[in-house]
Length: 366
Ligand code: ATP
Image (cartoon, rainbow, N blue to C red; front, side):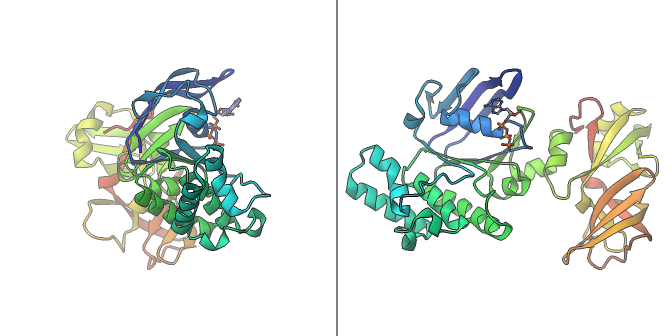
């Protein structure tokens, strides 16, 4: 159990700053997810902590100890990779015991730890098998088991679910969350998948181009994205963006998106007033666009006309691809909606959840 701190950590490969001035305080026992698109630097951030890459500048601390110059094997961490990296000629038992044998752990202690980890992961029956006799999901458990027996202070996981099929991935996701609760150890988990990040992380660090964009709880990231990148990355289907202009007077602000106009949400007037006459980016999540015949609960809405382009019934809801002037956007509407391709449909926008971003800086206006 330990906290982990990145202090102004930069990693440069030639001209590329894979990690750029990263400051991150990860609390003891936290499940922190590093998420971002391919190439954003999340794996590099993890490898720097594991000691598999050397830091260009800054410090990494595990607990109170600066580990920049500590050998990987002495950092008291265990890493689980996307490729399970099991030794093919060794049994499951020996794969799990291998690291402990290298450390000259007594035999009885190895046996206790391997059996306990196998029990936690439900692979007690498989200990004598070779990796090639296991399914992908079972191999991933062995890889997790090998990490658990080390009883590390910090678990690092780099896309550990990406080789599993969709169903197994959802199942293993929940198992890793349970494992975290049971082991009460710090977990740092890398993924490009926002759903994994949202469902597993106690906090999420969103990265792009080597830079930390926002560090927050899943709900806060979703409700209050710091900038347009985070707003578009978190949530599925992604947030709709509209070019719009702020018009009108301070106490009667309007958002003019060309083909439709919305009144400015009352609680946003003060922040939007300096933008009168200026262009902004407006963000509306698909779940905040409703068929006007089926508006759930109490919310302050504004109705606009749209044309249905494509309809995707999902069972519990319908995704509608809508057109309004030059804008195309997605709505997640009630399954009773009669919106059909080629037909007109009035949709209600939940004004309480509309987001605004500065056109130049792309930072949230809030
Ligand atoms: P992915 O999800 O695709 O693995 P990532 O977010 O984990 O992406 P990194 O692997 O950390 O990204 O890479 C960040 C940047 O650093 C990329 O531009 C990558 O090309 C570069 N990079 C990573 N490792 C090296 C290396 N050993 N030598 C040169 N450039 C590297």
